[in-house]
Length: 433
Image 1 (spheres, rainbow, N blue to C red):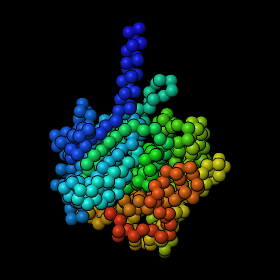
Image 2 (spheres, rainbow, N blue to C red):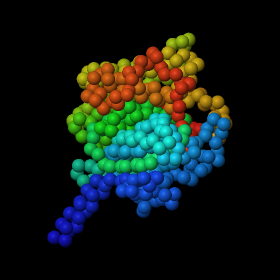
Image 3 (cartoon, rainbow, N blue to C red):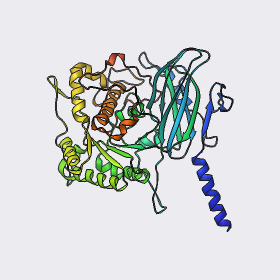
Image 4 (cartoon, rainbow, N blue to C red):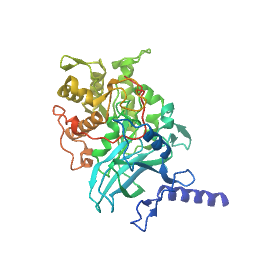
């Protein structure tokens, strides 16, 4: 009887923890919310507070002519269990006009350049997926995602949800965090998809949530350097399958690193196609919906045309998609159109091309023709949304009403794109090429 009572108490506490709502006030205007002061520093025992202040301070000491952090930039973390959380942020200030950008976890964009007048406030809601490496299996056993060493220091796989308040003149009045049950879009892929945690590397997966309402979540499981095979071997798909609900979506973009596999059985129409079919079968067994995304192009021009560098892999994805009745977003073709429309020189401004000294300790210039910068990732995220619309996926209902149809042949002007850097920087390119 005593054991049963303890078990019931444990279940009650677990359910209570999972259903907890947090409400924090940074200016004291909402008297019903927990008032946050400068002394509220995150610790695991406290469970919430300002975070990464030492990293911000160190980055400020290393600022350059071109790399500067906004005054008022801060991170705020809350320890929460795995799950989807609706975050409601009120930006603005009684004392000053402001311009605020809100990102979460590893630089996932949710609010972009929200301008407020003195005394004006604006409220935004969005859903953030938070996860750790533990996999809970149906038989009660546990497994883990075999993350890479660099991920162990990132904000991707920890036990807290982190909000980044940034912008030209950031001002945050209130943050509310509550667990929510909504459809989830899981992302499988490599360095062109992953939530890149450090400047200036950026991928479409971390900008994609910006275009969606607070009625859907994006859970990005991609990682740099991975193939369809290594993603599976690291238990990333296993973790997704342990959480996926009927009607959830799993977007799959591979073919970029897969073409470099030389092991026995490797090849576009051999191991790669077989692995894609495995993904489809396992995802459908969970009554979730697979969607293929062909790989982004590399910036490799011959004259004014992009050279094809992915061999048979995009075609293999198309073949498997058609054979298995899987919807496919043609990102390979869209990024070719995009790069050619920008041209040989301007297209550099969509990838990590920066002169030496742009970022702290950057002794050599960046000339990376594979990995996207914030502008490039922003543009590609629009292509993903456009692909969803053109396929008429049910996900279309979750696209924000202010999204404007995007034509890759008519890119946005990179001169007008604005991005506030964070304090996390890496001068070593991500895995993959």
